[in-house]
Length: 344
Image 1: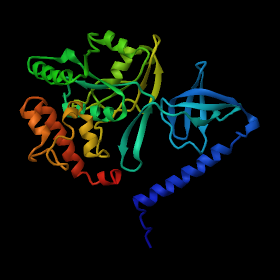
Image 2: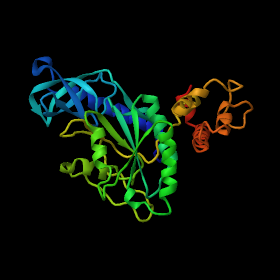
Image 3: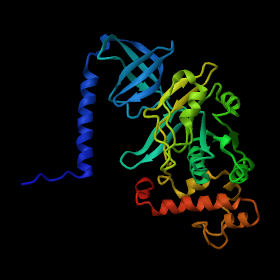
Image 4: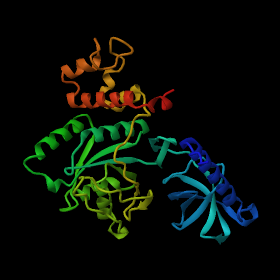
């Protein structure tokens, strides 16, 4: 008789049980209280499965196990950890507790629900580029995500050396929309160095993260800002126009002049299907004056009579392109079958 194929749910449960057993085994190896030093403060600079690299207050890095009581740990977390008196299999200590996060950047995951990406971030640089394609919908999605977290967003247009008569005017007009509603926009080029000094200044004394589609040059910018790291970059694919993911594990780096940068794996599309319609509304900051002014409480902001947003667009108080982007995001919530599991 042929073996019955496991369902996705059964496979995930088996993997979860195996991971739990591994955690229990790791947690019990040589880490009794009398074999550990006193608790110290540290920061997670990278996470590898059931281990994490913790940087001490003295700047040394130790690979540590995680206590079973720790439910979530990401790059940028501030932790309490204890160093083992003996290093075993490259493991030097144990993380015992995670301090309360000031901010956390998350994204929805089909299997894991809301998945944290990085913690304690001060500002998020939304990187787009002249080529392979300038896309305001992607920028709007990142802005909505940033507004949910309280992290300050800054829009970066990369590869401005590729401006020409066919694209410059339209792209600059699109960026002016964001500037008019209060967002900071920075134009940079890794090729000729334009804007790199200004970008470096914005990174001083802050914890920052770069986000954006693959191919926009995030890793190349990191190389310009921190040439000593020698991060791997790849050319944009000539066939698809999209770059390959060049960062595989999130990691926190320090700038010599002060400030930190979390370099995180690229995300080609930042899903928002875990958000409610009201949360998306709040992610468009220029909509705030019109909140609660629609004629009907269940206004869908489409062709509804008495819609305050529609009236604001007609009165040129809201840009029609931003309103159209808002409507597309709302429509994507309605068509995604997974939305309900996050909004019950």
